[in-house]
Image 1: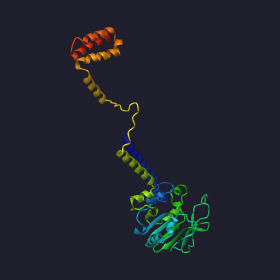
Image 2: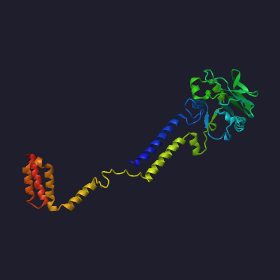
Image 3: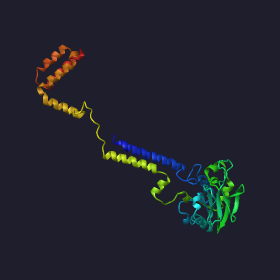
Image 4: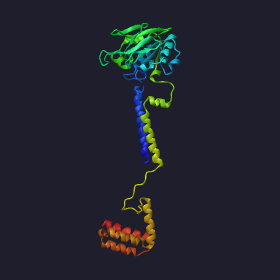
Length: 338
């Protein structure tokens, strides 16, 4: 049983890990906010499922944006962080998707205090200076210096939803991710905005790659993504304790001073020792007499002198131990009946 301790510890760690992963995967909390794989308030799974019931084809994209070959599709890129606009890769990729005839809808995430210019698009992204705790506050981002863009919606004279044609398609910028989330779809659904954003294309594609959900990658990358370093460390520690316990036994418990040097026998070993002792010290002809002597010392007072005398006389009448034993047993049974 002692060796099962580390194994049970390892099993418990695995069970806790499995339960934790099941809970996180059921709600989608392992994915970033804005993902259609999240079913909690910060996810967009409700919007995805609603479109799946009204459009002919709705899918998630796990491949690089450059590998998308869709035409006449609406491509949603929700919760784009400000840092992604620092280089030309993302704007160029989205422009290329729009130029072949797609509608690209980008929900911009706030987070940069200074206006950020999207290179090649002639538009700047600026965080709203108002307190985001206000009840009426909905648009954390607005757009500046965008004369080539069509303003679809404004908030306090600030453009918050704009659109521009790129080649055969269009790109739409939305200054908030909240209208697409499960929370807002339940509490304050903006149906006109959602219907306008989806457009009329029968094919809808939600990009998940900008949120870190890729079809490729390594196991260690997935662990870092899901923040599983601590769990892996606990599993390795439990495994190390198990193998250490199995390969290097702990030192024995020291014997008490009173029993030091004595050999204690138990179970079958003690019975075997007693038999060997009897065979060595007591001859067979004197075995019954020795048993009677021990019995008289322990039970003689209760049996009475008459019974003891009768048993001692019986011992001296025969040299057959079994015959003598049967006579003694008959005497003791008679005494019990009296």
